[in-house]
Picture 1 (cartoon, rainbow, N blue to C red):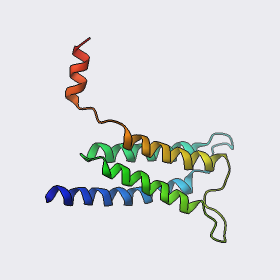
Picture 2 (picture 1 turned 135 degrees about the horizontal axis):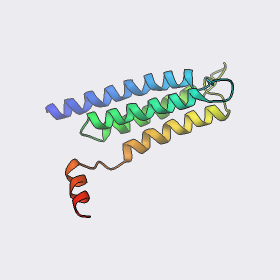
Picture 3 (picture 1 turned 180 degrees about the horizontal axis):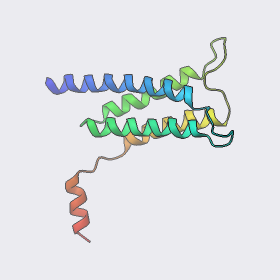
Picture 4 (picture 1 turned 180 degrees about the vertical axis):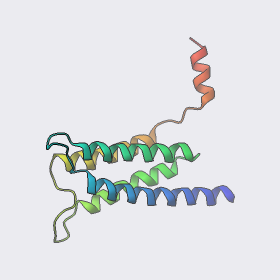
Length: 127
């Protein structure tokens, strides 16, 4: 029973982290340095990757990462809708890089196979 509560807690925490990362990245993704270097997109996508890796390392299950990826995707979908006003993620190059890049990174970390230290050691000594 404790592991089920732990899994639910970690999944809920992952969803909250995903919403925070999506809000921060949506605000930052249009920023550029000297009007040429898209530093906002780089920082936003780096944040998605680092938080997804932190969730993957901290939890022993795959479900929190899937919840993180789905929450990122859902948040970005909502932010790209107009709802009668301006869009938060416009349909330009930076918007596409942020929306598709964040979703791809989050799902890639969630689907990446978990390799234990024992497997690394056995493969390195086999050579």
